[in-house]
Amino acid sequence: MDQARIIRVMNIQFTKMQGAGNDFVVLDETRGLLGLTAAQYKFLGDRHFGVGADQILSVRSAPSPEFDFEYVIHNNDGGEVEHCGNGARCFVRYVRSKGLTDKRSIRVKTMNNVLMLTEGEDGRVTVDMGAPFFALADVPFEAEHAQVQDVNLWQKWRLAGMEYAPNAIESVASIGTILPMAVLSMGNPHAVMIVQDVQTAPVHEMGAWMQTHPAFPRRVNAGFMQIVSRKEIKLRVYERGAGETLACGTGACAAVVAGIRLGLLDSQVDVQTHGGVLTISWEMAEQGLGAPVMLTGPAVSVFEGEMTLPD
Picture 1: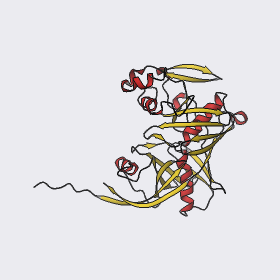
Picture 2: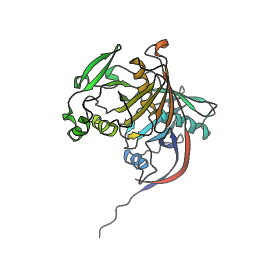
Picture 3: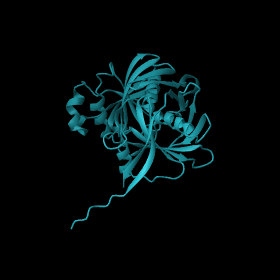
Picture 4: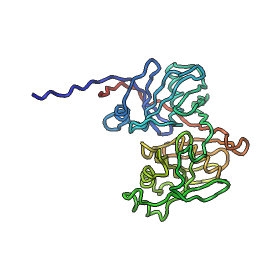
């Protein structure tokens, strides 16, 4: 007689949060690591069978005395990623509301960075996202797979050949040419393209196509920016591992930084996303390219729950 496979399960408590529509499952691992697998993170993020989220955020104890916490991020495909600005705002709101700290400003360690997070009196949260990275190796970006165009003491790039994504040739070709893009890192890779209208931009087609392009060995967050004025933009972002989200904090930072470097935007910009407004500040003119990028926006708890995860 065939024996049914025994499935071990575990119960976890979670909080569902969102920042400008970018939604998260937040897990408290300050009392011990849950030891979740990539498949379990993916299950949590699944909008049909799990809780549903763009990313899963883990709150962990400080790895050393100079930090208050450690901040670990997984996409809803189960993969760990370096950075999430909207998630960072939810992080500080979470630890304060749960009584894990009474500080308004906290210092957290991520996979490859250190962040300062501050909750304001008005409830909005500001994140010091650190300085952007422009060296192509830091993105990373393989320049031999693109053509360069010098602009305002910087570069824009056109990706080479559509042979890398044959299933997307028709969709990408429909926009007439491959959009030139600014390439940079906010601790994770970004490519920013300027479009006339974000509503008609080929976000899904081109965003998906770019994920397999050899110029981006670690994939890329593809941003489509419409400039409204020097103080306002509209933005859509196709995030690696998640697809298009209602808002992307690091994507908003990357778009504003790119616009400032290209001479198109002022130092403080409101970013209109499908999920709400984010405010980005970057004082390049006063502090140079190493100036930190400041991200301000909302962070909201939606609900709490308990869920059984399959092994």
